[in-house]
Figure 1 (spheres, rainbow, N blue to C red):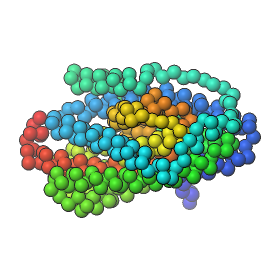
Figure 2: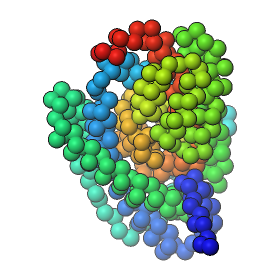
Figure 3: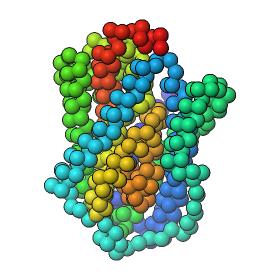
Figure 4: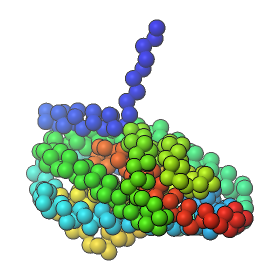
Length: 395
């Protein structure tokens, strides 16, 4: 009998990359570290190039696809989902900025603290993106709404196909190379002598994100339960299977059947569940936003970079838009936000790589929070629209 091939998930690959990079960084000769540095910078340039294309390829067809059919209920779901997503970002900011001073040391990864040893790449290659992030966002909304208004099936098909190419690129090229990208970054950090700081702080940062995501779910269900007139803790308990499933497979879209089944246990009608849960899996990213916010705020704090609240607010508002439809792609929310970390928050490629490492180190709790939060939105939508079905069925 043929032996069954063992397939490692992204989480396992990231752990292996962290372990191998940590060990090799202690003993690697300078020329090898410089080779890794060369790959690291080239891959960072590739990421900058692909992000605007990702937004154009995913957000445009997402707007075109969800823009028809359900009228007021569609706008309500998307409005609540976006509000929940940006509120989760502000919630993470308030909690993180008040908690991190108790167990993280500011400036540990500042340029002055880590500049004792630098490794230069052998080759530096610039790959300019076709447009910047804001241009891609505006163009995506313009095209998506234009497709809805004109009903252009040809243009819609073109962007559906273009989105398919971008998804294929992310899933077959970018995501498989991420563990090696992290490996090269960790190896260089080990050679520079700053790895102990990162690994020591990483566990605290990840646990902070997990705890904050659970607290945010309790807040969500408390609000949704008050609106719907239901016991929030019973409703949240009914969603536990969806949370655990998403945590284990690290996907919002793949858990839609489980999420829908759990939502029905909360007494939500089939029509509302069938409409709300698939839509929210595309536009509601509260858990991923908390994870990204905690990771980026922690890196900024460790690097001694002050982030004014106005700058952070700009980042959260834009990230909530940029990440629309990204959950359909593995690591999509992270990919859609990389450009914003550098263009708005002012992160260097090395700091962005650190955010990526922290984000991917325990990937499951973000999607788990996302899908569980979808159930809270379904409770609210059921309360608003269930007693007036014709209003949305005929709209």
